[in-house]
Amino acid sequence: MQEFLNQTIYGKLTVIKLLFISLLSTCIVLNLPPAYALGLGLIIGLFAYNPYIHLTKKYTKYLLQISVVGLGFAMDINEVLKAGQSGILYTSITIITTLAAGTILGKLLKVNTVTSYLVSSGTAICGGSAIAAVSPVIKANDQQISVSIGTVFILNAVALFIFPPIGHYLGLTQQQFGIWCAIAIHDTSSVVGAAKQYGDEALNIATTVKLARALWIVPLVFATSFIFKNEKKKVSFPLFILFFIAASILKTYIPMVANNAKELVVVAKVGLSVTLYFIGAGISLKAMKEIGPRPLLQGVILWAFVMATSLYVVWKM
Image (cartoon, rainbow, N blue to C red; front, side, top):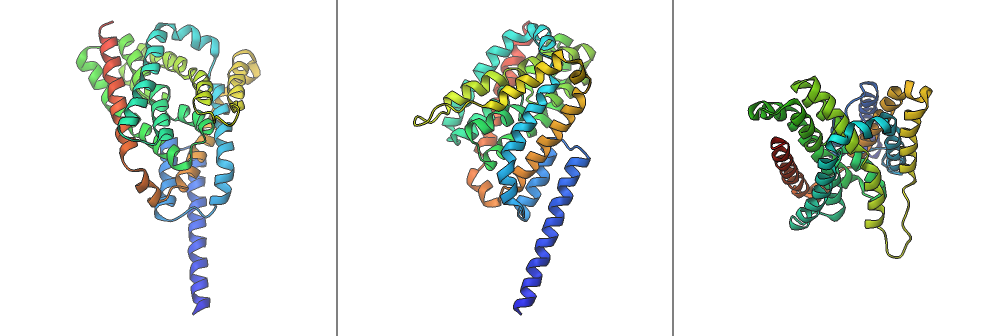
């Protein structure tokens, strides 16, 4: 009887390991978007368990930081700063306002401080990339990262479908729509997708303003390291953000790096997807129940606020 039980348990473990590896391979081979990778990880975490939990927990934070550094190769600092001047005022105002409103809303809804800050950061700047950059600094756990990224990616998907019809209904110009997209949609891919449906001029404006917004990741990470510092310890300087800056500088000034930047960014995005797969696989049903729906509610209300206020501003331009 005992031998039968041992064989059953061993067989179940083998199946789960094969499923884990198969889904991981799917993420890598198909270069799945981070949201889908997170979803596949959640299939393992919620309906089975992560058979390699000790390894993934140990190396996830390093893979996350490396992936963030790789995303720096997508940025040409000079072009972004020059092209993003038209939206710099709206960018600075909305980022500061969103972070402040998110903090207040998180307290009103009694959302965990770390989760609330991640949701606010993702809404204020560039979704998953901002959350990924901030997470190691505030030592966010897997559940907090998963809930925050899941929230912003759900809203990204919604924005992709509703923004163009709203823009056409209100008669927004290409410039107005491009700026609105860049300010009110979290993730760069969704910004590009929505703006592309509206027109070439909207696409160009939206892309450049969004990339200019992405540069705010750097000061955000620095500010975060001070906000969440431990009084008993010195401020832990986020060294990986220096490498992030170095990557964008290399892409800007070194032709050989610039010529291979697309490939490097692809690798970074694969790394981010793998990271989110690991994070999702570490989430249990019990942990999700403990977190509850409040972070999602915070994200929805905060996004609605940003979407409405930025729309009003660009509409009156």
